View 1 (tube, rainbow, N blue to C red):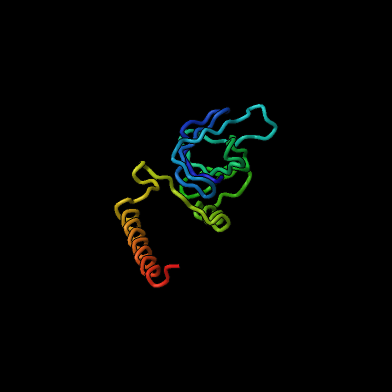
View 2: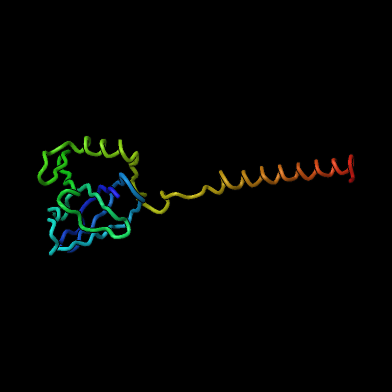
Length: 149
């Protein structure tokens, strides 16, 4: 998964991320808990509470606290990664989108989410199917009059 979000809480063992957009992976408006391992060999990304970040998450089932090479801090239109030159946020997002082909924003409310419009979709289609089925029955009746075998 690749997520852009705001760090709601940033501790050494837990990063809580509120997603703004998904550049790869399933979209959800729920806060993400990224658990860290402070005694690990690889250094974790330096993320402070309230910062906007772009994070690479290797496993959607077990999201882990990002390492230094798995997170950009987004600030004032630039993307900062430890040990790398700053890039513009647009440049980083565009290069990722060129590969993944995805940019999805989670729905703000339940009403904005995906759903079925019963009145404008299912009812008319059900009516059309009923009419086609009725025409089929009439034609079958006519055919049996012509050839009763």
